[in-house]
Image 1 (cartoon, rainbow, N blue to C red):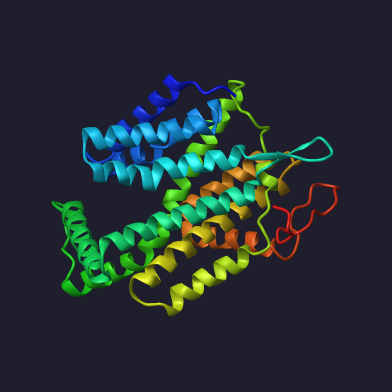
Image 2: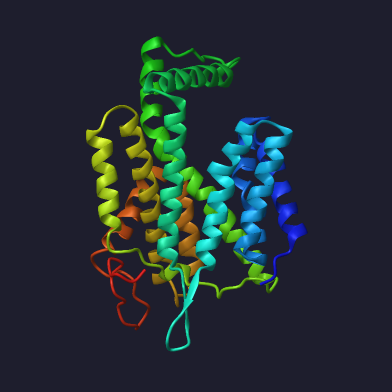
Length: 323
């Protein structure tokens, strides 16, 4: 696959502009822009090879550092640009087998890499923020400002008392690392999927499209989740928040696995479209409870095979060494 230098540089330019735009404006608009930052990088990579993705990441970083600040360039590089290029590299990684076939990097391991990257980005942010007290003060100020602006002018609205504000702050402090890691994963994986689909439709995708509903996880994945949960329960301070981030990331992997299992088991049925649409409506409305049930489905598949096509054999469980 040839490296198209102008397209790679242009992708880096677009990603840098979107990243800079995500620092201003309404919160919702910033979140949408932040979710789309890595799309040009991934699109360049899936269309012209992993080198194009890394070149786009590097050019975007240099542009931000020159036009804004070195800190902004480094933040862009460490949190979004090069992680996205790294995932493209893994997705296109392959080896030739003795029988003449090609083995591509497994989707399950790619999702684990995304989880590790997302949690590591959150950990980097936590350690750069400083101690927990500084982070708590920042969250408290943000919650206070949000509540005041959100309820201003509403009849019957009352500001939070100091006690209630402290409780909300503590809750936000505990769940923020997990939510941040899950949000990072969702954004970067969505961009990877969209970019790969565009490359596929244009005939530029260098690898065959994988069976996303059939992906499996390595055998040690439940242990990773258990270690992260243990750290979230027994550690203190910043280390505990870091463990919460990893727990949230690996939890998200199992939510994705549970969704894949449900997609797989609906194959061949006429009611598949309606059932899956209803599933995502329920997941959107009852996010916490529904995602927990779906994650448990994924975790169960690590020990008992749950994927079965109508009239077909039962595939091996996800805990097999094959991913």
